Length: 274
Image (cartoon, rainbow, N blue to C red):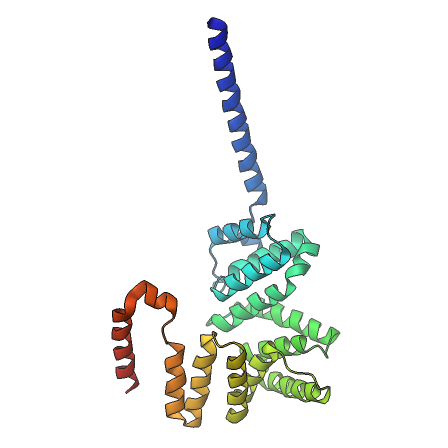
């Protein structure tokens, strides 16, 4: 009996030690994998981020079961959700620690940088400088690649670094594409629509936005921007119609809030429009 009791106690002690050892190993691994956000963030007040979110995203991106395509898709979603600064930190960390792996997400890095510039009232000056420098380098390496031109030109415009040069680069790109019988891709169409608007050529801007809407009918930002251009043209009814499309209910909205709530919202919207 004593031997059996001793044996059971020994097993319990061993199990407890093993569990403690496993927990300690997991803690150590988590600590080793923890990203020093302050090291890879831009050190100014314009670059705000959530450190816990950085660590959470890093864990998701490192998940072995995810392919590069999966991770690219998750990053794109996080950027669209407004977590571009956290993605920037992770990719800056990756570029320093695992350069080969970072190369797989180059486009996401550019998207995150551009999202910061477009969605921050006063973008981080150092980030803007780095972003333009990188975009210019890519453009000069492959000046005939439309993504490089569109990205660089958009940054020049969005940052107000050189709006005229940005517009001219895009107009020249459009001419070259048509000369080569090559269609502009979505990124180029977005950039051209904005360039034509800034250049005062509203009709061409509207045409590009309509084409984009045909390609991406679920992108509500396109309806909003188009309504803005139409309003500038004096097409008030058309502008109001596209603005209403921007705020039209989705299935998720109705499931969450119900039709009564939407009815109240619609009444308020129509009153404000009048």
